[in-house]
Image 1 (cartoon, rainbow, N blue to C red):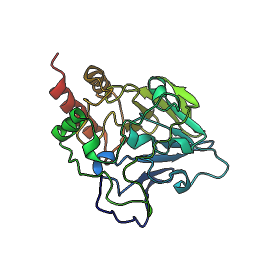
Image 2: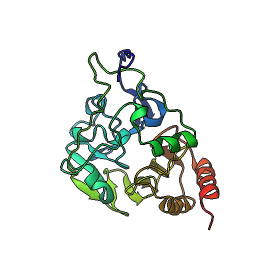
Image 3: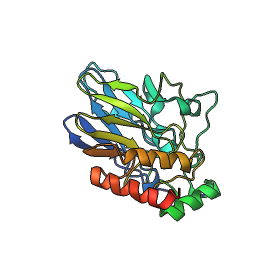
Image 4: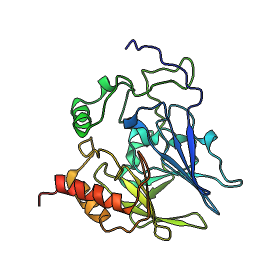
Amino acid sequence: MSPTPLPVAPTWWAQSRISPDITLLREPWVTELLRCNVWHVRGKRRDLVIDSGLGVAPLLPQLDITSGHEPVVVLTHTHADHVGGWHEFPSRWLHEREAGLVDPDTSEPDLASLWAADLDIQESDHMRAAGYELPDCFLTAVPHHGFNLDSLPHHPAVPTRLLREGDVIDLGDRAFEVLHLPGHSPGSIGLYESREGLFFSGDAVYDGPLLDELAGSDIGEYIDTMRRLTEISVQTVLPGHGEIFGEQRLREITSGYLHRRDKT
């Protein structure tokens, strides 16, 4: 391609402190479809990072890691907009059903380009039908001069722990239960803390058009996931994309999906 040159971003990452223990990081120069929420949770014994962005610019140096802690990154799933900074962390955890998708010996990027024209036609049609705009390029700026827009950074790395339904991630002063929530992808997970009603939902549910016809998606599994999420008691949903919302909005989103997809 012969792209129009993009400006260099003054800073790549934007940060918002959600609470004393939780920070949200975003890449504002990535367009909406691929602008992943990266969550940093500080614990008494361990810092947890949930998802890792597109990988266009380093993530780990941006994190205010608690002194003496080794951070662990947990992927809610392995789509390219969530896995980009995975390789930067020594402790890398994800659900067992997607382990092969980040293994250096077997993995391929699910998005090989930063250009919409290079997407699979069926997937791009699904995204447009869901209501997303697909700009020519998924970036509106570049992190530095000389950045190659024709190659999405992709750095697979071997998982150090495989997660399953019901596993517990203990940070010392708070613990998250792993919920296996397939449908958007085979190994999609959420992290749930019942004490405060916190739910890191990944792309299983967020306040925007849900995508269930991507490679690896399964509408039947997604229906089961949405039925399950109608029963969960939460105070705060911290999703993989978009804004934070509460239990009432969660009910509206899950009910809307089931009305549209569940014909049984």
